[in-house]
Amino acid sequence: MSAGATAARPQPLRPRTEAKRARIVEVAMLHFARQGYEAARVSDIAEELGIAKGSIFQHFGSKDGLFFEAYKKATRAFSPYLNVPPDIRARGFFAILRYWLVRTEHMVREDWIPYRVYLMGNYGTDLALRRDINRFLIAEDPYGRVAFVRFGLERGELRQDLDVEVIVSIIDWMVERFQDALLTEELDPGLFRRPGDVAEKKEARINQFLAILRRAIGK
Image 1 (tube, rainbow, N blue to C red):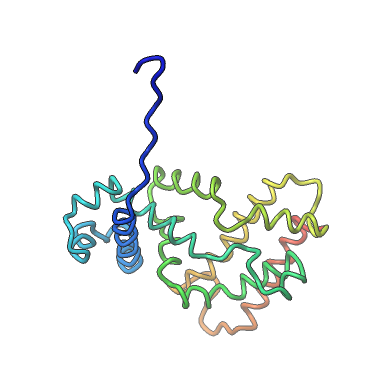
Image 2 (cartoon, rainbow, N blue to C red):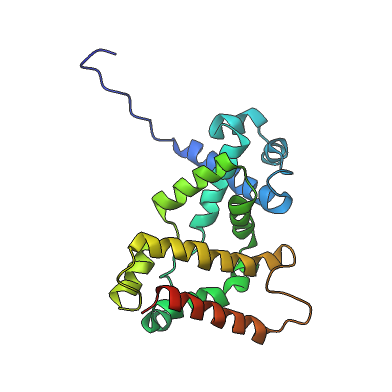
Protein backbone atom coordinates (compact mmCIF):
# COMPACT_ATOMS: atom_id res chain seq x y z
CA MET A 1 0.00 0.00 0.00
CA SER A 2 1.41 3.40 -0.93
CA ALA A 3 2.00 6.08 1.68
CA GLY A 4 -1.00 8.07 0.51
CA ALA A 5 -3.40 5.12 0.36
CA THR A 6 -6.06 4.58 2.99
CA ALA A 7 -7.51 1.30 4.18
CA ALA A 8 -10.81 0.40 2.58
CA ARG A 9 -13.77 0.70 4.90
CA PRO A 10 -16.14 -2.25 5.22
CA GLN A 11 -19.12 -1.78 2.98
CA PRO A 12 -22.53 -1.71 4.68
CA LEU A 13 -24.64 -4.79 4.11
CA ARG A 14 -27.32 -4.55 1.47
CA PRO A 15 -30.93 -4.74 2.72
CA ARG A 16 -31.46 -8.19 1.20
CA THR A 17 -28.26 -9.46 2.80
CA GLU A 18 -29.24 -8.00 6.17
CA ALA A 19 -32.67 -9.60 5.90
CA LYS A 20 -31.14 -12.97 5.02
CA ARG A 21 -28.72 -12.83 7.96
CA ALA A 22 -31.54 -11.87 10.31
CA ARG A 23 -33.66 -14.78 9.11
CA ILE A 24 -30.77 -17.23 9.54
CA VAL A 25 -30.19 -16.02 13.11
CA GLU A 26 -33.91 -16.26 13.89
CA VAL A 27 -34.12 -19.88 12.76
CA ALA A 28 -30.80 -20.73 14.43
CA MET A 29 -32.07 -19.40 17.76
CA LEU A 30 -35.00 -21.80 17.61
CA HIS A 31 -32.75 -24.77 16.80
CA PHE A 32 -30.26 -23.91 19.57
CA ALA A 33 -33.09 -23.38 22.06
CA ARG A 34 -34.80 -26.67 21.24
CA GLN A 35 -31.77 -28.92 20.80
CA GLY A 36 -28.89 -27.31 22.67
CA TYR A 37 -25.63 -26.03 21.22
CA GLU A 38 -23.97 -29.40 20.60
CA ALA A 39 -27.00 -31.16 19.10
CA ALA A 40 -28.09 -28.31 16.83
CA ARG A 41 -26.76 -28.81 13.29
CA VAL A 42 -26.04 -26.12 10.75
CA SER A 43 -27.25 -28.49 8.02
CA ASP A 44 -30.68 -28.71 9.68
CA ILE A 45 -30.88 -24.93 9.96
CA ALA A 46 -29.96 -24.59 6.29
CA GLU A 47 -32.54 -27.21 5.30
CA GLU A 48 -35.32 -25.37 7.13
CA LEU A 49 -34.30 -22.13 5.43
CA GLY A 50 -34.04 -23.77 2.02
CA ILE A 51 -30.45 -22.60 1.50
CA ALA A 52 -27.05 -24.26 1.20
CA LYS A 53 -25.12 -24.93 4.40
CA GLY A 54 -22.17 -23.11 2.84
CA SER A 55 -24.28 -19.97 2.63
CA ILE A 56 -24.55 -19.91 6.42
CA PHE A 57 -20.80 -20.34 6.81
CA GLN A 58 -20.28 -17.57 4.27
CA HIS A 59 -22.25 -15.20 6.48
CA PHE A 60 -21.08 -16.31 9.93
CA GLY A 61 -17.83 -18.22 9.42
CA SER A 62 -18.59 -21.13 11.73
CA LYS A 63 -21.18 -22.65 14.02
CA ASP A 64 -19.61 -20.64 16.87
CA GLY A 65 -20.01 -17.47 14.84
CA LEU A 66 -23.66 -18.26 14.19
CA PHE A 67 -24.32 -19.00 17.86
CA PHE A 68 -22.57 -15.78 18.89
CA GLU A 69 -24.97 -13.77 16.72
CA ALA A 70 -27.90 -15.74 18.16
CA TYR A 71 -26.66 -14.98 21.68
CA LYS A 72 -26.37 -11.26 20.93
CA LYS A 73 -29.90 -11.23 19.56
CA ALA A 74 -31.13 -13.07 22.66
CA THR A 75 -29.60 -10.61 25.11
CA ARG A 76 -30.90 -7.63 23.15
CA ALA A 77 -34.41 -9.04 23.59
CA PHE A 78 -34.21 -8.50 27.36
CA SER A 79 -35.22 -5.25 29.01
CA PRO A 80 -32.48 -3.18 30.68
CA TYR A 81 -32.63 -3.00 34.47
CA LEU A 82 -34.12 0.50 34.51
CA ASN A 83 -36.94 -0.35 32.11
CA VAL A 84 -39.52 -0.85 34.87
CA PRO A 85 -42.89 0.71 35.75
CA PRO A 86 -42.54 4.27 37.13
CA ASP A 87 -43.81 3.32 40.60
CA ILE A 88 -41.15 0.60 40.90
CA ARG A 89 -38.40 2.95 39.71
CA ALA A 90 -39.51 5.57 42.24
CA ARG A 91 -38.98 3.06 45.06
CA GLY A 92 -35.33 2.71 44.16
CA PHE A 93 -32.47 0.35 43.39
CA PHE A 94 -33.38 -2.65 45.52
CA ALA A 95 -37.07 -2.44 44.61
CA ILE A 96 -36.03 -2.70 40.95
CA LEU A 97 -33.93 -5.77 41.72
CA ARG A 98 -36.87 -7.35 43.51
CA TYR A 99 -39.12 -6.59 40.53
CA TRP A 100 -36.86 -8.48 38.12
CA LEU A 101 -36.24 -11.41 40.45
CA VAL A 102 -39.96 -11.91 41.08
CA ARG A 103 -40.65 -11.71 37.34
CA THR A 104 -37.93 -14.18 36.36
CA GLU A 105 -40.11 -17.23 35.81
CA HIS A 106 -42.81 -15.18 34.09
CA MET A 107 -40.25 -13.82 31.63
CA VAL A 108 -38.89 -17.22 30.70
CA ARG A 109 -42.40 -18.52 30.05
CA GLU A 110 -43.24 -15.49 27.93
CA ASP A 111 -40.03 -15.59 25.88
CA TRP A 112 -38.38 -18.96 26.39
CA ILE A 113 -36.23 -19.00 23.24
CA PRO A 114 -33.94 -16.06 24.15
CA TYR A 115 -33.57 -17.35 27.71
CA ARG A 116 -32.48 -20.81 26.63
CA VAL A 117 -29.94 -19.32 24.22
CA TYR A 118 -28.78 -16.96 26.98
CA LEU A 119 -28.23 -19.84 29.42
CA MET A 120 -26.35 -21.86 26.80
CA GLY A 121 -24.09 -18.91 26.10
CA ASN A 122 -23.32 -18.51 29.78
CA TYR A 123 -22.80 -22.17 30.64
CA GLY A 124 -22.82 -24.41 27.59
CA THR A 125 -20.07 -23.10 25.31
CA ASP A 126 -16.30 -23.49 25.10
CA LEU A 127 -13.82 -20.99 26.53
CA ALA A 128 -13.04 -19.28 23.23
CA LEU A 129 -16.70 -18.54 22.53
CA ARG A 130 -17.29 -17.57 26.14
CA ARG A 131 -14.44 -15.05 25.84
CA ASP A 132 -16.17 -13.44 22.85
CA ILE A 133 -19.44 -13.35 24.79
CA ASN A 134 -17.76 -11.67 27.78
CA ARG A 135 -16.20 -9.03 25.55
CA PHE A 136 -19.59 -8.32 23.98
CA LEU A 137 -21.30 -8.01 27.38
CA ILE A 138 -18.65 -5.58 28.63
CA ALA A 139 -18.56 -3.49 25.46
CA GLU A 140 -22.31 -3.26 24.83
CA ASP A 141 -23.77 -3.70 28.35
CA PRO A 142 -27.15 -4.81 26.94
CA TYR A 143 -28.75 -4.98 30.39
CA GLY A 144 -27.77 -1.41 31.28
CA ARG A 145 -25.91 -2.48 34.43
CA VAL A 146 -23.65 0.58 34.55
CA ALA A 147 -26.60 2.98 34.24
CA PHE A 148 -28.46 0.99 36.89
CA VAL A 149 -25.57 1.18 39.36
CA ARG A 150 -25.14 4.91 38.74
CA PHE A 151 -28.87 5.29 39.42
CA GLY A 152 -28.41 3.60 42.79
CA LEU A 153 -25.38 5.73 43.61
CA GLU A 154 -27.16 8.96 42.69
CA ARG A 155 -30.03 8.03 45.00
CA GLY A 156 -27.59 7.41 47.83
CA GLU A 157 -28.62 3.76 48.14
CA LEU A 158 -25.21 2.25 47.40
CA ARG A 159 -21.81 2.48 49.03
CA GLN A 160 -19.79 5.40 47.74
CA ASP A 161 -16.46 3.79 48.68
CA LEU A 162 -16.82 1.09 46.01
CA ASP A 163 -15.82 1.64 42.40
CA VAL A 164 -18.71 1.58 39.93
CA GLU A 165 -17.16 -1.35 38.05
CA VAL A 166 -16.82 -3.32 41.28
CA ILE A 167 -20.53 -2.92 42.02
CA VAL A 168 -21.37 -3.78 38.41
CA SER A 169 -19.31 -6.97 38.76
CA ILE A 170 -21.09 -7.88 42.00
CA ILE A 171 -24.45 -7.39 40.28
CA ASP A 172 -23.23 -9.61 37.46
CA TRP A 173 -21.85 -12.35 39.68
CA MET A 174 -24.53 -12.44 42.35
CA VAL A 175 -27.80 -11.18 40.91
CA GLU A 176 -27.58 -12.78 37.49
CA ARG A 177 -26.39 -16.11 38.91
CA PHE A 178 -29.24 -16.07 41.41
CA GLN A 179 -31.63 -15.29 38.57
CA ASP A 180 -30.12 -18.09 36.50
CA ALA A 181 -30.84 -20.49 39.37
CA LEU A 182 -34.48 -19.43 39.26
CA LEU A 183 -34.52 -19.89 35.49
CA THR A 184 -33.07 -23.38 35.44
CA GLU A 185 -36.31 -24.78 36.84
CA GLU A 186 -37.75 -24.21 33.39
CA LEU A 187 -35.01 -26.38 31.86
CA ASP A 188 -34.21 -28.91 34.60
CA PRO A 189 -34.85 -29.16 38.35
CA GLY A 190 -33.25 -26.03 39.75
CA LEU A 191 -31.77 -24.82 42.98
CA PHE A 192 -34.97 -23.19 44.17
CA ARG A 193 -37.56 -25.83 43.37
CA ARG A 194 -37.63 -28.80 45.70
CA PRO A 195 -40.64 -31.11 46.12
CA GLY A 196 -43.27 -29.28 48.12
CA ASP A 197 -41.85 -25.79 47.56
CA VAL A 198 -44.45 -23.05 47.56
CA ALA A 199 -44.45 -19.44 46.42
CA GLU A 200 -43.87 -18.22 49.98
CA LYS A 201 -40.57 -20.10 50.13
CA LYS A 202 -39.38 -18.55 46.90
CA GLU A 203 -40.37 -15.11 48.17
CA ALA A 204 -38.44 -15.76 51.39
CA ARG A 205 -35.34 -16.75 49.43
CA ILE A 206 -35.56 -13.58 47.33
CA ASN A 207 -35.86 -11.55 50.55
CA GLN A 208 -32.83 -13.31 52.04
CA PHE A 209 -30.80 -12.77 48.91
CA LEU A 210 -31.63 -9.06 48.73
CA ALA A 211 -30.77 -8.66 52.41
CA ILE A 212 -27.33 -10.17 51.79
CA LEU A 213 -26.79 -7.98 48.74
CA ARG A 214 -27.89 -4.86 50.62
CA ARG A 215 -25.33 -5.60 53.33
CA ALA A 216 -22.63 -6.02 50.69
CA ILE A 217 -23.20 -2.93 48.54
CA GLY A 218 -25.98 -0.89 50.17
CA LYS A 219 -25.65 2.02 52.57
